[in-house]
Amino acid sequence: MNIREALPTDIPQLFLLESSCFADPWSQKSLRDTLNEDHSYMLIAEENGRICGYLNTTFVLDEMNLNRICVLPQYRRIGLGTALVGRMFDYARAHGICTIYLEVRESNDNAQRVYRRFGFKVVGERANFYQNPTETGLVMSAPVLAE
Ligand SMILES: CC(C)(COP(=O)(O)OP(=O)(O)OC[C@H]1O[C@@H](n2cnc3c(N)ncnc32)[C@H](O)[C@@H]1OP(=O)(O)O)[C@@H](O)C(=O)NCCC(=O)NCCS
Image (tube, rainbow, N blue to C red; front, side):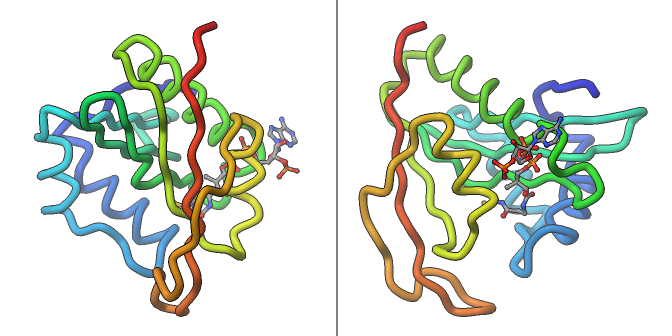
């Protein structure tokens, strides 16, 4: 498995990945606009040219937001999510980011377990933040500690 930064040519595959993992996939336009931003960092995990997982972040000054992370169902539980989040922290540490934020569905235990392992803690709640189905969003944050 190869992990690298996303390229504009990855957008069609990223849209398919989003569509396989989320009820509300990001459009190709949103993915492209975010990738083109100066303050974004997007990583993909690929095997033989097939994108199996990706992570999508944006940042302002010393704060980063993890907008999305997903792994194709057949590639879950082999450590890809953990590897992507680990690489995100490496990037954050190297770029003066102090805190990483994210939102996660209250019921999404799989994602929360990965996040907690990296020091994320719940710092707030947003009622009805998610649609399809409607659900509370937990706001989590983690400090980016020096190694
Ligand atoms: C959340 C998500 C990205 C996690 O990705 P993942 O690649 O499965 O994550 P990991 O493999 O690193 O870790 C998940 C579990 O697999 C376990 N695992 C990791 N490597 C393993 C291995 N070699 N053998 C067995 N289990 C392993 C981890 O310990 C962890 O177990 P736990 O849940 O009991 O703690 C994935 O479940 C996903 O895409 N979900 C749908 C989209 C989503 O909800 N995204 C988050 C909201 S934006």
